[in-house]
Each structure stands twice: as C-alpha cells, then as structure tokens.
Length: 299
Image (cartoon, rainbow, N blue to C red; front, side):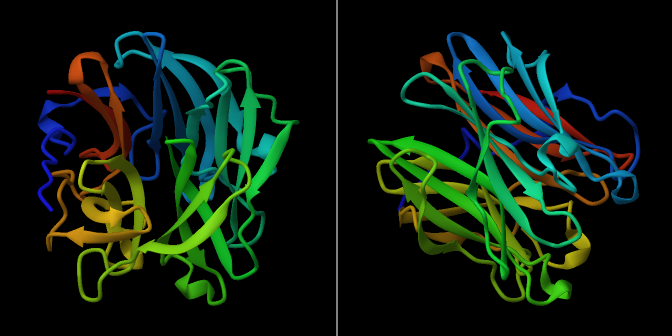
C-alpha cells in the first residue's frame, strides 16, 4: 500500500501557536483539539487542563476563527456541569442535517471509568449541558473516551480509546476500538482496530487521533506511549489498513514528536481547506513542560 503522509505529518518548526495554556509549567495544557470547517470559519473544540492535584481536565472550550490561527471563544463547559471529575478530548461534528454535535469524554467521579456524552445544538457555542445523552457508556471493565468520528457514505465511523479497569495499576493501558452508527448516537462495536506492540515505543497504549479514508483504504494517526510514566506525553505514529477496523502501525519510531523534554506531540487533527490545502492542529509539549495547541497550514 503506497501512502503519502507528508501533507498531514506535523513539522513543529512550521507551526504557530493557536491556544496558550493559562499558566506555565508541567500539567498546564491547552490542546486535545477537534476542528471543523463550515462556511469559511474553522470551529474548534479543545480541552484545558491543570495539574492533577489542581483539577485535571477542567474545561472544554468551543471557539471559531476566520484564519485558523486566532480564535474567539463561543462557549466554555466546565467539568462540574458534566458531573465529571475530569474532561478529556472533545469531538466536534456537523451532522448531515446541518446541526452541531459535541461529544465530551467524562471521567466518572472516584473511579478510573470514562464515558462519552453528546450534546446537540443549532449552532456551535449553543450547547445545553442539561440536554445530553450518554452515547458510549463503557462498562464496569472498560473506560471509553477520546472519540474520533468520520462520516462517510451515510455511515458514521468511530474510533475510541478503551482502557481496562479490572486492575487499577493497568488502567493507563489503552487500545483503540472501532464502531459504526447510522445516526452518531447508537453505536455498534466491531472490536479492536489498533493495539500497541510489545517492546515498542507504543507498547503501553495507542489512541487513534485522526483518520483519513484513502483510495487504498484507511490512514490513521495515533498517540502512543511505551510506559505509564509517559502518560500525557504521547507521541504521534502512523497506522494504515484496507479496512477501518484493522489498522497496522507503520515504522518502528514515532513519526512526530516535540524536541523538548517529554517529547509530547499528540491529538493530531486535520481539516481539509478549499483548493486542496489542509490545516493541522495538535497538542505540543513546550520547553517549560506546559502544553500548547499549535497549528500548521499545508501545503
């Protein structure tokens, strides 16, 4: 399978900062982006995070930009509004009927469990947290979060990060499972699409961050880590397959990473622009240990 990933692979020296964390230093993150182009605007949902002892993922922000780099805030959703101990990567989607849907990854209080809830509105920034639906509940043995959703040929495709809960010491492990839906609310699971490789840089866990359907099949970018100590500092890898439910990692090294300590470069998202161009968004570890949300325009 011949795949050209250069158009979508991050090159940090080409990037500019789109969103800064509120404070400097480790544990202060702005990132986990999900972007949508609509009517000339780029709409962006992202997560703000503090150190664990100060509240973890505390807010999801919905914003918009006319140039893809400078954003104005439309709405902020705090973890308390979602009855969550922490929030992780949001997913922003425009439905075939022109409405907007925001999927939120929510940590259940006092557990290692995660679930995904959906909000729907007529416009970005108008989401009502009182009207939400649990779409990926997980179960007592599995936490589910960080959904990546692609609509294609009338089918909704989803890849979600799944964590085992039976052993608390193993809850940082992750695989990516694949599901489909007719409406983006009721999902049918089809098993594990991507797993880490023993003794490799992605051995402890893999989390699909972006998916592109190609002429030959499916190209996916994913976050990987080798050990629990790398949680929060995952690096970006590439996987491919002829089917969306069966992805194979490519290469024996990360495809993109930060040059700074921790080396985190994760949660890559790709937005197609008019004229065949694309814009990348991703979370990037800085020299001070904080994470900021960066963007690149391609080609």
